[in-house]
Length: 232
Image (cartoon, rainbow, N blue to C red):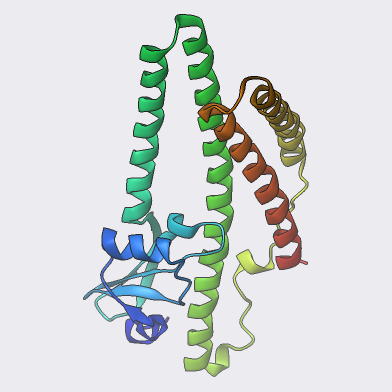
């Protein structure tokens, strides 16, 4: 089992896990392997990635009384927690603005549209976060396994963790069905946003719809390509 003093060597930037530090890491896109905070009986380790930016997880590594690793947990960083709260408040305020500044029927349509787009964006970002977090988790586990192999050469022939041997099936029935439903919906929203934009001019919800839809399609295709490369 790997000891705490060995894993501490992975931490290049030793700093506290505070909102300010995670804000800076998200803003400047810090991919250092790794940033972290060293505590008496645990280590907090993190780094950003291409798509996650500020939504990267913190890995909390715990150790027993002998300094041996006995667990790894993931949790949201303070910046990501704040971002979630701000996003919810923003959507609520946007709906309230519609209620008090427009007539009843347009307000209801606008609220439904914004809610659907918000939910759609949440599903999209949830899947991106889940996939990127899995990659970062496997990356950290591999780094820890490499330390264990260096300290114990006799374990060279030990099988690697199953997560790295398992090939992710990108085109399962569920994922195909999801894309068959979401892609037409995306193009429908895109069509409504663009035609409305051309006929009636620029409005916030049309711009928001175009950005969300294009972001989802581009990132979904990019992630699919990356998965094929990573597991081929």
